[in-house]
Length: 524
Picture 1 (cartoon, rainbow, N blue to C red):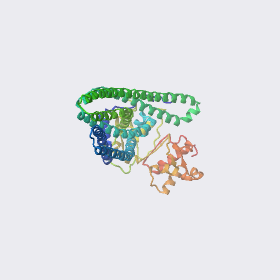
Picture 2: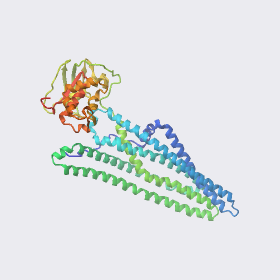
Picture 3: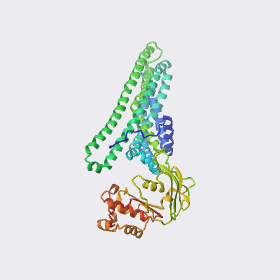
Picture 4: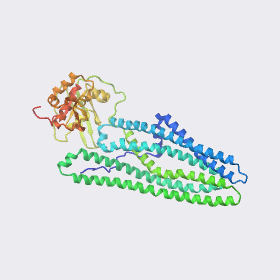
């Protein structure tokens, strides 16, 4: 076993079709209807203006090709062209400004949805998902999908331009438009085939990013172990291997996308050469005039330009959609510990605990408990002893509803704990575990974590109960002393005492100690 063991395993539960992703996306932007409507209007105005401009150029050229040309018509077309150019610049600025307002708010909502969903999950979810990968969903994946929103707006505008310009091609010259139409099946097949390839490669790339983040988090959290055993070089090699997978995934997606644009440009160039050849023949034969052919070529370029732009956007779009898939994978995951819809809030428990025929396993078929029965009377102090792996911590995890048991029931004061709301039930529990977790902040904030409104008297009563006052008085800033992530700057015993005080402060009806004094000296 080493750093990154299991990182390359597939952790995504399902894949989503393009239709599902788009439906879910439009549902998620529903709260921002005003911004979406404004952006859509700006896109529509821009599209119409893009279609009008070549028409003005064609009118000017046709007028200039006449023997008795009207200079006012040419000047009028030029003024309109310049006016539309200014309008396009203003609309482009307003569209970007509105998107710039929309994306941060959308990202804020999306990240909160992911974060809230993670808060709902039970411990079995976190057993299966590495913290580094989950962090990637909240940070990298959310940001990449937020940026994809910009591309979706541009893609919509480009799609509309292609449709309207092709309509203009049909109106200008049906024969030349049909020649252009020959290129469409080739473009469609190319886009369809590469879409599938890019989506698969993008999924691999997103997973590779998650693997790198997970490996980095694991290496930092386990740095003291690596140094203790002199394994820094081994950890570095293992991270290098994970990083190499990330590099290969990035190189693969770059290679796939770079071969796409030349193929599209080849198709567009062949089409343009064909139009110039046949259009020239039509002009010589008097079937049409130069201005019309010039307009046709301008519209043809506008028709192909969005397709060329899409060749640049599409890889980013695919990566964004792959990121959205991973986000939805979290949002659609259901916790195994679910609150009963008919659950009731409870006030104060007396503390009689009964385990009835409990069946429980972490992995299917590997039973930790099979028909466990246990009765703890109100006010009774019970010590559970056993060899390593006997199920002591599992017993605590079931009582606190960190995990769901497969069979039987747990009752407190004759009420099934599944019939109690999770928050009201857990407010009656005080838990001190061997693996203490303290948040970055002051010592006081950590002790008050479960009861922020507690009085000074209650706070100091809890501190004195666990004999923590000597540490508080020793520290220059006392309770206001700032501690680092996971209690850095404090000894393991001091961290456990703070955790003890935190549990005592909430005045729990049931106090659970899971090897809570393992790091505290015998005198204390």
